[in-house]
Image 1: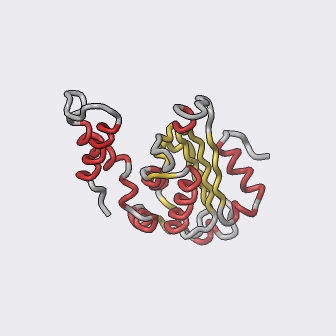
Image 2 (image 1 turned 120 degrees about the horizontal axis):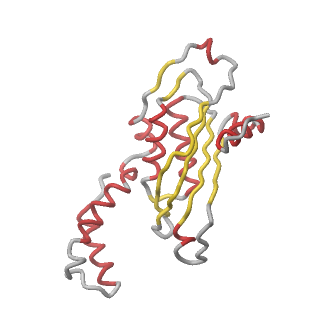
Image 3 (image 1 turned 135 degrees about the horizontal axis):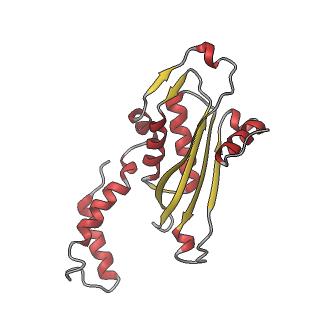
Length: 200
């Protein structure tokens, strides 16, 4: 369902009034329209289900079976910059870096598509843990591989700008599927790849 710009404008105007300000003064009279346009952009991912995002970025390349049979070769794209908004406070999640790995199972996905998937998933009201599981679900659908890992590190303004106000705090989440959830050495290889450390 498309985002309702007119409803957003109406409610933002109401919020301005509730805050005790005048929505018709010079600095605010166009604010509801600006916010509605911004919300259409930053919440674009809410227009699509995970299945629809998978269809949107379902550009894969067939690999010869001889190159992947019995292989544990991992494809890793790390430090994908995204942002999102926390569903609890509508507060910005910023400085978010996403790293995604998978083990090909006959198909490989274009590297830019991994970044686009992460970006689109972030453009929703989210929890950081849910971002990881959404990315993993979409990657599994597109690549037809069950072996997916997602690592996310980010700052949450609901912790840094309000409440406890711990400015240097970061939240780290991991999502492991398939072999990544069972093979500790594979997990270690993934985490070492993110941290630029060679595997022993």
